[in-house]
Image (cartoon, rainbow, N blue to C red):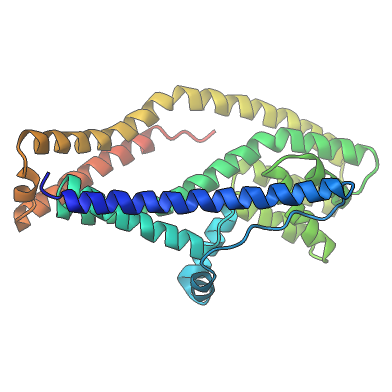
Amino acid sequence: MDNLPLLTAGVTLLAGVLAVIGVHLLASGRAQRQALVERMAQGGGLAALPGRRRRFGGVDRRLRGTRLGLRVERRIATTGLDLTAGEYVVYVVAVLVALYFIIGAVFAPFFGGLAVIAGLWGANAFLTWQRVKRTEAFINQLPELTRVLANATQAGLALRTALAMAAEELDDPAGRELGIVADQLAVGRSLDEALGELADRLPSRELVVLVTTLILANRAGGQVVSSLRNLTESLEERKETRREVTTTLSQIKVTAMAVPLLGLGFLLMINGMTPGALDKMTGSVVGQTATVIAFGLYVLGAFLIRRVSRIQV
């Protein structure tokens, strides 16, 4: 292979990044385990587990002073990931450098630049995917949440107390998000503001309906219990419908992912049959332009497939 040194450097860098992340997670797990053992030895105290040690503190402090850093931090906060903006940016930069060397060595140097652009898009898409994944998990917990709130209000508890109790009983992400709402209410925030921010963090029609129901019931003093009971039944039906739609569209989603991968497979096949063909193809402006157009068409095809198969339930 002509670019074996570049490929070796890229693979080594990527292995180093994965090793750092692995050691980082291992140290965090050991620290939490030790803290848990100490709590159990003390008789199960209520002290919270200390957070893990943050890496790249200097980078994180500099990023917080920029608009980009604040935007990244807000996006990470909506995903529930245990990352700082500095850690995320350093990891992304390391992966982009590794992609440049690896793709440039396997295909051609020009494709390394395209891989960096695709990596930047992928880093943003990863945060979006994590947010959607967390929102979907929260939606799946909504029937249980409304059931807990209905039982608590039927027992005579105030809505604020019912939210705090639900935060303790439910798992993440509902428990964590409701814990944030309960903390905001404890420091004097209004119910409208706290629930409104919850709907902004996890945007979904189901959550908007729940938030609107709770806010209107709190303002007008209506029958919260009966409203929550009816809402629980509706959410259960929507949950089953969403599961059926997801199962039906799974093949289309796989097709949307396979379309760009086929293009990469063809490039590998061409380069294997005629070594150096990709270098010659991207050695001129015409070849580079044609390559960019071809990749754009593949991306457009995948986007259109996903767009056509998107069904709002």
